[in-house]
Each structure stands twice: as C-alpha cells, then as structure tokens.
Image (cartoon, rainbow, N blue to C red; front, top):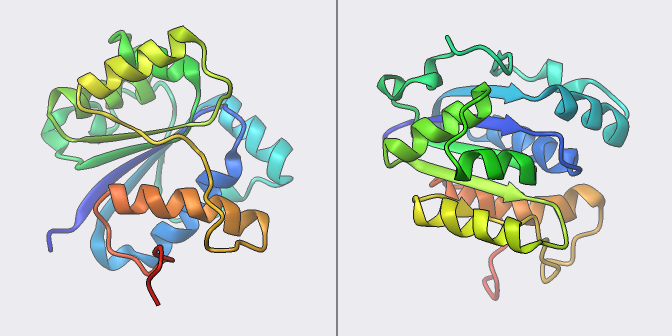
Length: 188
C-alpha cells in the first residue's frame, strides 16, 4: 500500500474533540502515512482551548503551518498530498471552498485538492443547515468533495465523549482510505 500524504485543517466550528480524536487516531496509523500537514485557523485554536481546556494541539508531531502560509507544500498540487480532512468544517469555510475563494491556506489547499481530483472530506458540524449551507454542500459534492456531517452513531454503545466523537472519526478514517480496527455494524 502506498503511504498517504494527508492535510488536516481545523476550523473554528465547535467540535474540537473531533480534531483531537482524529489526531490521536492518525498517530496509531503512521505505518500507512508518509506525512501529515496541519493548518488551524486562529478561531480553531481558541475553540480548542475553550472546549478542551488545553493547548495540546501543539504537542502532536505533525507539520503545522500558519493559516496564511502559502509556501506550505500542499498549497500546490505538485506536492501530491492525497487527502484533505477539514474537521470540524465551519460553514464559512465550506462556503469559501464552494465558491473558489482561496483567501487562506485552508481554502487554498481545498481548492488544490479538488482541482487535482484528490480526496476532500469536510466534516461539517453546524446545525441546523440553511438552504445556503445545503447548496454549498451540493456544490462541493459535485466538485468531488465528500461531506461527512459530524453525526455520531450509537450502535457501538460509546461510553465517553471521546468514544462518541470516535464514531465520526472512524468513518472519516475509512473515507480517507486508511486501514483501522474499529467497530463495524453486526460484525464480531
């Protein structure tokens, strides 16, 4: 199996737990991953600190880039990053991606992933959806992106908040094409 080059973008939508659980899971899958580049919006850092009560995102051994760093390798298709996961994905970010507005590294990287026909996974967290949100999700889907709402499942009988978030992250990891051990419906 070819190792993956993955971009993880974290926006300021509520749901930092999803990014944390994804980071933790990616650490367990390093044998399948060549490189992980991370970009967090300023709001994402503030929301993480508010919701999780820490700045532990700085402790992960990934390559972190500033939101306006257009010299990041994944700002160009020539770097050949395979997959981009936006988790959580704010509706503002999704709207900019849907309309081709590349005004920061997150929206530029998403634009690159879509134009190169690679995998974009947007883990939208806001609710309820307005018609504008739905149309933006439709536009991104038609451009080749995958909308994966942060809707947890409960058939695995999660016990903790991280377990609940893990039901969404497990689906995201599957969508990214990584092999993992996780609960599967009606499998022993």
